[in-house]
Image 1: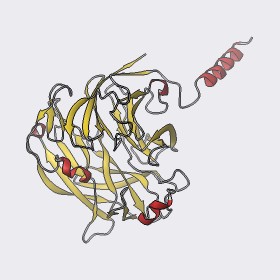
Image 2 (image 1 turned 90 degrees about the vertical axis):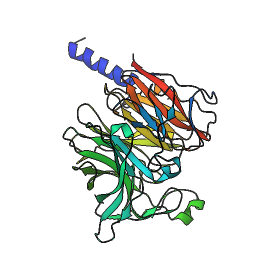
Image 3 (image 1 turned 30 degrees about the vertical axis):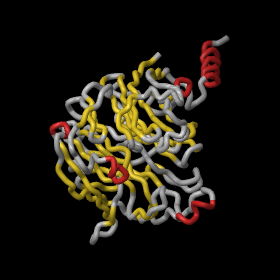
Image 4 (image 1 turned 60 degrees about the vertical axis):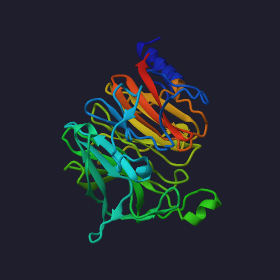
Length: 367
């Protein structure tokens, strides 16, 4: 057989054994559990939305609790009130710890500016010294042409797009963040059962915004994903990660449970995005974390709580080594997970477990 024929046959065999979106180096996630095992670290009772802030001194905040040992033990961190009070969590959006040690906390809900059209505002809190205290709120201004009000996932009025999930710091010091909401052209009703009709939900889109002044002002950059022909609700809860080669990766949902996740990538600083790619899992929520070695993790839930890994920047996912977080109930109420890398290859995952927040300390390796 001629050499080129041998190469061709080998390539065809690889494609058969490793179809696109499946084959990659293994991501081994140790430290998870099985459903109903109740083996997580108890962190905060009577809380439903997980939240983590990685401080410059390597301590971690979960609301008003602080851990200095990677999540093993937790102690009272201070009387913060808003923005670290659990009662105000539904109003809280993205957080980020900048390279200069500044911690930023943004409000989830936005409001139209009282005078300027196509301008929205949200609350911004700033902290240094490992969140010993904080300043704010200031008003962050977000310019989003064509954005319009809608309703949130509970059917309540939403006066502007949602600022939640992810903020990343770019090499030049600028900030990128994801939002979701509705533009004027987004008029397609969601494809949910009749009981949702009274909420007048319309299919939403996910988009990117950019700041050059550490979060005080933002400008619309591009739409990450939209299209009423895909999925039952449009794209929402977008996440964002910066890969070592400068690629931006976004993963988002398009349905509440039983629906796949979707991803898109940008190699030009967010100006354009690839065609969306389906991640064939059942999920109503998703969060994303890029580790120091470039490994990408996504945590998703409802039903259950699971973690997937990727070693090629989210082009493919290691479905064979999917890990479970192990909750007392398979419902796990919100199905949300917050993750942070406490040291290379060591990840703390905090999740809602029935009526409280629990944690798992995970070790990420490759084989």
